[in-house]
Length: 89
Image (tube, rainbow, N blue to C red):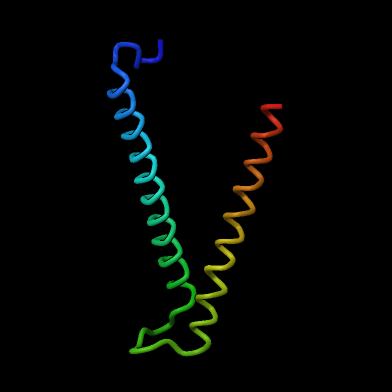
C-alpha cells in the first residue's frame, strides 16, 4: 500500500502536483542557500573595504572565488552521481 490507494484519481493527481511543487520550492531554497554561502565566503575573502563600486582586483577575486565553488560543487555532485550509479548496477 502506497498511501494513495484510498484517494480518487483527481486527488492522486493533486497530491502528485503538490509533491512536485514542494520539490521545486526545495530546489529554490537550496539554490538561495548556496548563493548566500558564496556571498559570505567570497565577500570575506575578497573585499577589504566596501566602497561605492568594486575595483578590478576585487571584482576578479569575487569571480574566481565563485567559479571555484561552482567547479567544486559540480565535481562533488558528479562524483556522488557516479557512486550512486555504480551502487545500483
